[in-house]
Length: 165
Image (tube, helix red, strand yellow):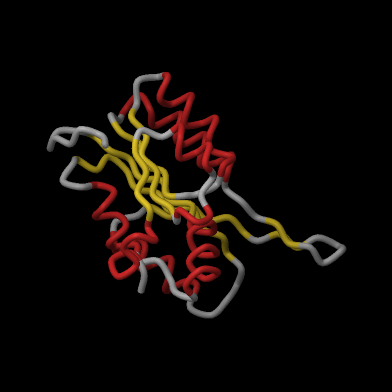
């Protein structure tokens, strides 16, 4: 586990789509973002917390975005795109990666809240730059490569009472 000290600067990047779909698929529940942020910061100095969300024009969506802000997250919102064939797409992989690389010189630890293996290369890059990387996600659906490359992994499934609503 990463050594913790109060002056350690930490940034938390939460892939809300990945967390939401996994929590729904495994437990039919939602993420407790307040507990997630508290555990990720863990008595360190929060530099920045960003939740990457998708606007799909659903009920209660704006309340969710506002709740994230009240908890302490900055929200980055991308609209869900619907294509002519009816397929839909929206993801934040590139945006999260760019933010992680941009934040790396300003933090000691980067906490990625996602199980998406697409971030494995990012973890290697950021660690090579001297930044510790922790991953918070559900073990059942998290890329082994992502777990292996991170300095620490917190399995949200091991404490669902804490991390789910």
